[in-house]
Length: 330
Ligand code: TYM
Image 1 (cartoon, rainbow, N blue to C red):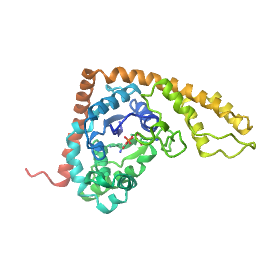
Image 2 (cartoon, rainbow, N blue to C red):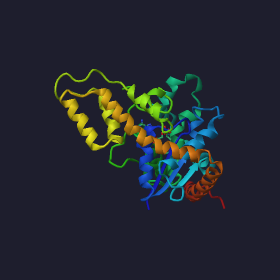
Image 3 (cartoon, helix red, strand yellow):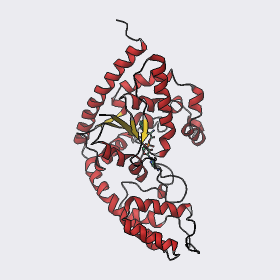
Image 4 (cartoon, rainbow, N blue to C red):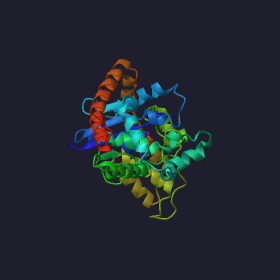
């Protein structure tokens, strides 16, 4: 079986972007591949050094992964910091990554702009740690959203550089999405993508209650509607259609598309429909996650079992790495 690896940072509540960019793929892939999915707690330290809320977030991410359909018996579901081999491979890879190329990473430049007071070395080498996560299991496929495309390019570059310098150990890892193109789920305010931290009113979280979901969807940006048949759709309207395509029936989508083209669309009605379809989609996940999240004994078992599976694979890779590098002295 080919190997799959991916991760999510425990920096806040998971949202619809995490679901449709990543989790939806995880759930389908678990039946086809050997899968390693983790909570990227070490990565979250690059931007969230205060760890008071970390435990709660780790529990939440694990619970939400399972509530979305991941089966801890089928996959290795673990915490990054429990797999110490990650740190060792990260160290070796840091000697292969040039500061010049790391400084050019878009996510690094964004973070420097957002938090000039905390430009730590971990932030610079973030893509190196992510590469270590992936190639530690010699994974070929990495289900992620569009925002991770550049990190995956870098992972390929570092894996190839290692192979070239020390001998073939790693397959090339590729970003993956069923359906081909990687996805970017838009925010509700018509600007950018949904994210854990930016404008919380424009992001739908898997933990939002029904009324909050309705409120957020009803506030999504619209206008007074098209004035000519078959007009070009503004981006923010296209975004609402994109969200409908994720959770609404084909019939509903066809109706509102025809209404738009015929200039009879009522955005209030469209958002009401979308809100109900969102509620129906999110509510079961929220309820399931809530019961798992508070079951600490179960989560501990999951984490222990996940770490054991992940470390077995990690140890085998580290052995190959040390041998390839000539770090075997007796
Ligand atoms: P993170 O925690 O920011 O996001 C987790 C996953 O959700 C996807 N995602 C989205 N997809 C579509 N539309 C959106 N609006 C949207 N927002 C988030 C992300 O692409 C990601 O797949 N660096 C990673 C975590 C990581 C990792 C790894 C991923 C650490 N090690 C190894 C893969 C393999 C991150 O910050 O994801």
